[in-house]
Length: 565
Image (cartoon, rainbow, N blue to C red; front, side, top):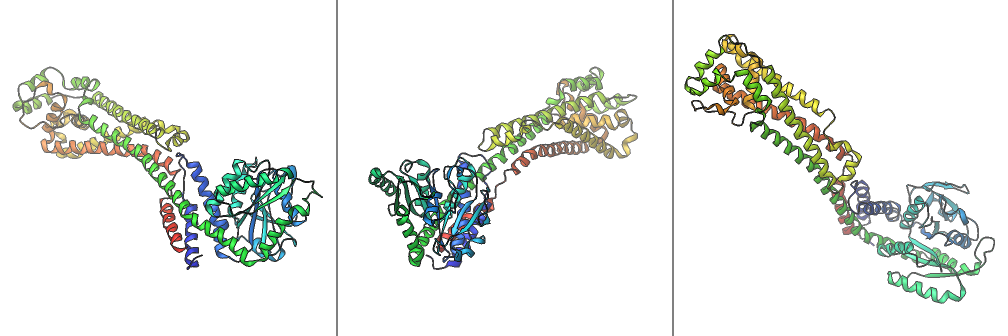
C-alpha cells in the first residue's frame, strides 16, 4: 500500500489535527454542507484511517446498516443464532449501537483504538446514549471479524442518523440491508454512492423478498449497483418468511453466514477487503481535504471583507470630520452670530477695511480697556464640532452595518448584534467629553505659549479662554492662515480676524504652530474615538474567528499524504 508506512501515518495524523482545527463559522452559501463534510472527514480519519494504519492486523469490522424497518438487528441475531441486538418497534429510539465480536478479539475493541469518541458499555447492560457502543461477545462469530449493528440511516432521531453515518465511515466492510419494497430509496443510495467514491467494500442483503419477485428484484438491484461502480458487491437474498423465535430461519441466512465465516477464517481474503477499503479511503482524502481547504479559504476571504467594511466606514467618517474642520462650515450660523457679538460689527470691522497695514495698531487700541467674554462663542464651537463628529460617527455605524447585511456571512453577525447598526449608546457623551478635553488642551497650550505675556493688555483682554476660543476659530477655518500683509476684506470673515488677534499676542509663527498642533490633536482624538467604535465590529468578528494556519497546514498535510501513500 505504501513504501513508507511511518511517513503516511504521520501525515494522516497531521491531516486529522488540521482538519479538526479548521473553522467554518460564517453562514456562507453551502457552509452547512461543508461543515458536514468536515465532520465526516475528521471522524473517518480518527475512527477508521488512523486506527487501521496503526493496526492492519486488527479484526475486520463489518458495519450492518440500512433503512428503518429493513431488519438489520433481526439479521444480526439470525446470523449469530442468539439475541444480541434489540429489535422491533423500539429501534427508532435513541440507544447505544451494538458491536459483536469473538472473545479472543476483546482487546481490539475495549480500548479506544476505533471510534475513540464513543463510550464503551460491556455485557447485557442497556444504554440509551447514542454516544456509546455496547460490546457483546459471541462464540458464533469467528475471530478476526466483528459485526456492528448501526442505527437506521433514515432514523427520525437526528442523533441516530449522524451516528449511523459515522459508524459506516469507520467500517472495513459495509453490509447494507434493504428490502424488496425499499431497495431503491434515495437515502441509502446517497450513502452507497459515497461508499463507492471512497472505495469502501460493500455487501448487500436484500431482505424479505417475495419468492415470486426474487429474480426480477435482484436483477434490478444488481443493475443499480453497477451504475454506482459497485458491480463487484456481493448480493445476498433473504426470502419473505415467518420468523422462528424472532429470528430468520437458518436456511435463509446460511449463505451470508458462510461468507462471513470464510472471510473471517481466510486471512488473505480479509486482508484484501481491509486494504481495498483503506486504499480507497486514502485515495479520497486529497479531494476531500482540498474541498475543506477551499471552504476555509472562502471563510478567510469573507471575514477579511467583513473586517474591511467597518474600517472603510470609519476611515470615511474621519475624512469627513477632517473636511468639516477645514472647510469653514463650522464658522456659520450660531458660531458666526456669537463671533460677531464678541468682536462687534461696527468700529472693529471697519478698522479691518482700512487695510492690514494699520490693523495691529487698531487691534491694540481695541484691546485697551476692553473686557471680552468668549464663553457663548466657545459653547457654540463645542456644539458645532460635537455635532460634526457625532453625525459622521453615526453614519459610519449604519454604513458598516448595512455593508455587513449585504455581505456573505455578515447578516448573521448583525442579527446577533443588532446594536451595531447604531453608534454606541454613550457615543454622544463620549464626543462631548472629547471636545471638552480638546478645548482644555488648547487652553493649556495657550497658557504655556503666553509665558511672560500674561500681563499684557492684549492677553488680559481675552485671557486664556478667550484666546483658546480664537485658536479654535482658526482651526475650523477653510484657509487657516492668511499671508501677512495680504489685503483683507470684511467678507474674509471670522478666521482672518481670529488670526490677527492671536498674532497680536503671540506672533505669526507661534500662531501657525499652535493651530497645526490643535488641529492634529483634534483629529487624533477623533481617530481614537472612532477606533473604539470600530472595535465593536472587531469583537463581533472575534466570535467567528477562522484558523488560517490550520487551513494551510491541512493543505500541506494532504499533499504529504498523497506523496506518502
